[in-house]
Image (tube, rainbow over the protein chains, first blue to last red):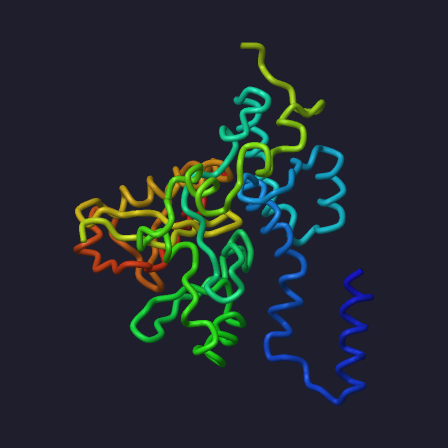
Length: 202
Length: 84
């Protein structure tokens, strides 16, 4: 898939006589990690989205290990911990396996700070107009600084929380700011009741 | 301001979070708070250090004496030999 998409993109650049963007190597190196970082993060804040997510089971993890030998070993402990939390929780008790801390978002792309790798996050902090901002990566900082007037007026979620314009409590945030309810927010698709996840009888 | 927001990153985690640090709390307290904040994804034990940029923070220092500023980036980095 990467060969198909990346090679085709490079061919298009060549046909138009364009150079690769300066962050090309960052982009290519992120292909092995980024979607795994986002998925694990989204899973642990699934109530903030409007769809259900699943924990990869043993067979899926074996597949991921074989297909992503460079990145999966660093992600496996995260899924082991999520699995352990479900093992200790009652089925359907989603918030026993859910983040409660305020999430950090990139002030350019507005995505969760999931850049880099588990070993080293690529987030970068910069000050513009006396205000500190965080970006998920150098390319996002570069995009912001190329057109600061376009983005500077946007108040991100963290800023709104810190200014008291949005609640910090996750449940209040989901209901009041995101407009989600128990019926509409994302959950574990199986309520944590996976056939491969053995629970101790309590 | 007695409490300041900080961006926290734990080595081995998949995302950054915001933690609120008290100015009179120690760097060690902040590390414990940060680990609690990411506990749904990280359950690692063992020695670690907190860094702000290139600075290694003294765990006994308070956030005030460590000259932390609001929205600083804090990295929790495991010492080698810490159990995964």
